[in-house]
Length: 568
Image (cartoon, rainbow, N blue to C red; front, side, top):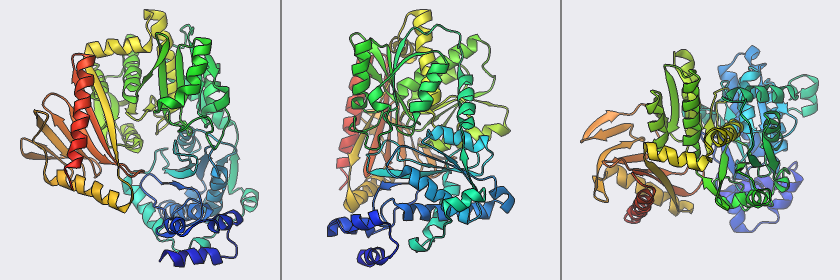
């Protein structure tokens, strides 16, 4: 079957020259992997390896995605509304700029206008720009922190939020109806520019985004003595991140080697601020200049990692810890200024630490937990527009945060500004580092610790094993683990919560996730990854001491790994 599709590509006279050369350079196993299926377009868009073939990301598969999006937009918007356009941004990866322009060429052919950023921009700025320009949709070409040979394609609704499943599934249907990649119609960019069906976005959007970012400050007047090392890890926040720190008066030092938008990410093994190794250059510079704080953003600038000076080294904070610090700072300082609303809402996900929820509740804030994926937080933020409640903060454990919902996605620029302010504030007012303050929070609320184990199961056999594991624990729910009884469990695929053998409905999108909560407050989650061949095992514990929590977490994660081995 795959051979037929391969020959079709090889015999296509107008095939892109570089793709043709790449085809001729592959062995049979590689060719089979390129053509045995179409690159899947999921609820989060597409992400895949660059190269020729239906199972790779290239100009033809990008056109296919845009053909599907165009059909969806034409169905749901009038011809007049289509003129409101689609905003298109891209990151620093190989072919990102080309894919952004290919998107505009397909949309323009279908009568849909595009606004294109002239150069790379952060993903959160794309979310902001959609609403700022009153557009009907948005596209960002990025593969986040994947390896250099990957790229991706994410789409946003008119509210600046990634399409949630009920809408994304309809788009997927349209994408899947496109059978002939070489028959997709597009219009040359020059023609679209002449007809004003494509407009390039000037720096006025940057200015507007920077100015609204500044509004998240609580104490802009504080002294700023701390030295901050900043790295965009070769990505899109290089310009906007440094500009933001400069204009708000922080003493920052960029990692020069990583300010370059290098698509090969030459200075890191993985451009992921969740990985300690991604901070190597920042740590070297930090030690050289005696810095107090290290901050890294991922290539598309939606995630942020932090390391705090600790004795003669730097201690990395995880996403849950950074989120708790940001939330605590927001709530305590807004309360002092009497700017907290009576009805405020804090958002997290079902795999986020319970610490943030406890902090929020202690300030009489409502807490809403969504499925994993920031699009669900963005969706809930939009729903608040019709209520008398105020968005306060949203975050997830995977280093994503948003303070104000002028962005309906993770925003590392918001987090960059607020964590810098919090660090300086606590240093000036309490002579404490962020790590010291985190210990204070633990002492007040409990020592909440979380961990993640990923079981890699590759290929078809791996996917089948992941399915068997999920099916087994769906049909045979646990009663206890490590001597602790199950308080309740939640099956998000079956939309049910079970307490004392009594079922209650869960009012969330269906998702292949199972979560258990134990009597001692510990919890764990089984969730197949949506982008990698992995079964993810999340766990969280709380005790009265750091040592006890660390030991308890290790044992819980070990038990979860053993559970997966029992399923054959």
